[in-house]
Amino acid sequence: MPHRTDPDHTGTDWHAQELLLMREVMKLVGRSLAPAFVLREMLHLMSELLGLNRGRMVLADQGHPGQARTASIRHAYGLTAGQVASGVYRWGEGITGRVLQTGLPAIVQDVDAEPLFLFRCVPRSQLPPQTVAFIALPIEVNGATIGVLACHRIRSRQRHLNDDLAVLRILATLAGQLLQLEQLVAEETRQLEERNAALARALDTSTARYGLIGRSPALLQALGELERVSQSQATVLLLGESGTGKELFARAVHLASGRHDQPFIKVNCSAIPETLFESELFGYERGAFTGANTARPGWFEQANGGTIFLDEIGELPLAMQSKLLRTLQEGTLVRLGGTRELKVNVRLVAATNRDLAREVQAGHFRQDLYYRLNVIPIRLPSLRERREDIRALALHFVNRANQAHERNVHLAPEAMARLEAHSWPGNIRELGNLIERLVLLTDHTRVTAVALERFMPESLTPLPATEPPPGLPLPAGNVREYQSARSHSTQTLKDALLRHHGNQTQAAQSLGLTLRQFSYRLRKAGLR
Image (cartoon, rainbow, N blue to C red; front, side, top):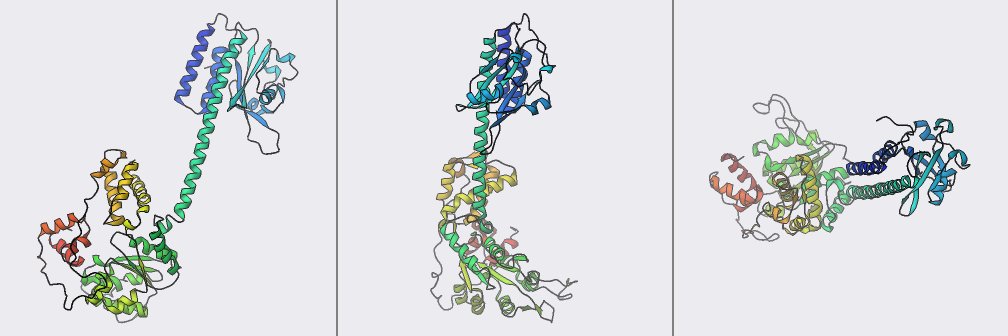
C-alpha cells in the first residue's frame, strides 16, 4: 500500500478510521505476539488511517555500567534506513530524550519554533512545508519508561489534537504490554535454558555416567566399585539378576579404563552352539574343518588391546572352560586347527545371573576358572533395590521410544507413581520393553495410570525352591536328571515363555532346564 504524505483527510469519518485502526491492530496481536511485526504494522496503520506520519518506536539500549543511557529507533514506518540509524538519543537529550527521562508526554505544536527539537532523524528540508507538529508519548513496562512512541502531524489537519492523543495513548499502552510479554517470554526461555543446561550437566556427571542412568545409593555404590578397579587389568565379574544392565556396566569398565580407545567385543555365551565355541572364541585356521576356506581370527584376537565381555559365562561348556583359563593365565591362544601360539592382551569382563559357587559345587563349573574370574566381583542392584531411579529410567525410555517411533507420548504423574510401585522382576529390560510397547500401542498422548494398567505385566508368583539356598552344599549325587529333547511339548514351552514375559532364563528354570536345553527345544519346536 503506497504511503500518503501528510493528507488533509478533508471530510474523513475519523471515528470510523479509529475503529478500523483498533480492529486491525487487535487482529495483528491475535495473529502474532512477536512485537517487531505488530509494532511496525501499528505504525503503518497510524500513517495510513490517521495521518500520523513517520512514526517510530524508540527503545532503551542495553548499556554497560558507567555509560550514559541511550535509546534507539527500533521500529519505524515512513523512515529510510539511514534515518532510522541516526535516531539515537541520550536520556534528557532533545524532545525524545526528555520524554525518556521524565516519563511525561511531549507535544510540539511547531517543530520550527521549538529550540529543543533536534531534527536528528529527519532534516527540516525533508519535512512538508506546512507547520509540522511532533507528538511523543512514553512507553512503560512495570511503571518504568523503556521507550517512546513518536510521530509527525500536520498541524492544519481537520482533526482535534486530543483525538490523536487519545489513540496514541492506547497504542503506547498496548506497545508496553507487548514488550513486557516479550521480556517475560525471554526470561522464561532463559530460565528453561539454564535448567536444561543444569540437567544436561547432571546427566553428564552423576546421573548418567557411561550411559548408566540413576543416582540411587545402590547404583552409585556399584559405579564407585567399578571406577576404583577400572584402571587395573584384573578380571571383573558382574553378578546380578537378568536385565540389570550388565552389558552397560561392562562397557563402562571399558570406557573408564586406559583401553577405552581400543576394541570392546561382547559375546553372549548362551547364544553360541556348543560345537562352535572354540572357533568363535579363538578363531580357526584354513582347512580346520569342512568349509573353512580361509583363516579367521576369533573374538579374543579381535579384542586384542581392548576388552572382551563374556555374558552368561555360566553357559560355557566344561571343555571350553579349561581353554579359557589357559588363555587368561598365559595370555596366549591357539586357533582351531592351528599349532602356533598367538599372544593376546585382553582385559576380561564376565557376567552371569547364576550362582557360580553353587555351579562349582555341583560340578558344572571349574573351580580354578571360578577363582580366576572372581578376582573383582561387582554385584549389580536389581531395579526394586533402586526405586528412586525408576522415574529417570522411565523418562529416558519414553524419550528414546518417542524419537525412534516419531511419537509424542508422556506419562501422567499417577502413571509414573504406578511404575515406581511395581516390583519389576525383569528389571530394567522389562521396564524398557514395557515403555516401548506403551509408546507404540497407546491411543493417547498423555498416559494415565488407568491407561497404563493394560500394559503392565501380571505379578509373578515365585516358584517353590527346588535347590538349597546359596551357600549351602548340595547333597551328594544331586545331578540334574537327563531329559530327552522332546521332554516338553511345544505348548509347554510357549506357556513358560508367556508366564515369564519372554525371559528364556526364567522360563528354562521354571521347567527344570538349563538355558541351553531350553533354547535347543525352542529351535526343535520351530519357535525361534
